[in-house]
Length: 368
Image (cartoon, rainbow, N blue to C red):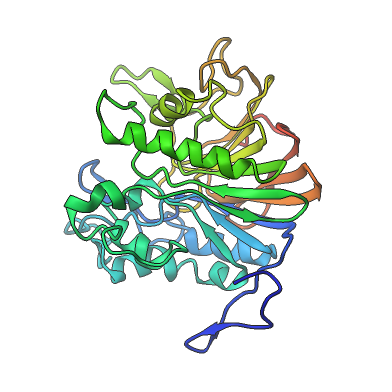
């Protein structure tokens, strides 16, 4: 619905929250589903609110009073059946039908869905090999198109990709929403179709970014964020930004993003994180801590010298929260200044950051 264009709207008798032309209060969440995954032998206790708290997070975020909600992707995680004898997930629906989608997203997210309009980015859990059919039917803002519906694997070269779009939010600022569902953190091999698809995505992004002097990008996979995993010997390996996007975007722009992009909002890594840079790169925020099983490998309070999420990106400030559930908020202060706050699942503020132009700084280096 266009902002201010209608007095009210409803679907099947249910009133829809109305968009405002210049939202000043934005909630950012991501990675919200309950993980049931055989390949990783990971079965989250979907039946226990303490272990799967998306409903509580959605209620707390709704109580904050947003004018807009941004979900940075990965809604659907209930891919495999709960093992026999596991009381934590016993009885959970699974697979890619409506019952699993409802249990993973619509039912627990109901309070926040009623609170404000949403922007819904697409994550890798919504590519055509996984929950893509549900994504195209339930979440994408565009009309469902034959061939771009993930029904037939022969059409996945169409269904796994889509053009970015811009959402104006006032004061000459746009949110730029990118579909990165089919990128690869390992980078593309020569001849892989995704390479040219994401080069085309960058060109479209660049054209959209030229429509406004200020832009905030939304992409599930972080270009400029850090993660960590643990090697077999117990040592910790720091992981950099998505290699597929860095490879393709970087082939057209060594700076990775158009100059008018002020900040990036992402998920995929199951934690909260902020990174600010000394050069011209935009700040990166990761809000992937809103329900699915959290990453627990610790990040350092300060990144080691020379460690950076992307080539040529010099980290100036770094903040994180590992192994904690919650949501992020953004309150606009003026044209290019935002107060960014990190809330736990009860809604309490655990960290406060200031985004000023492309640079950001947080009060706490590491939430504990």
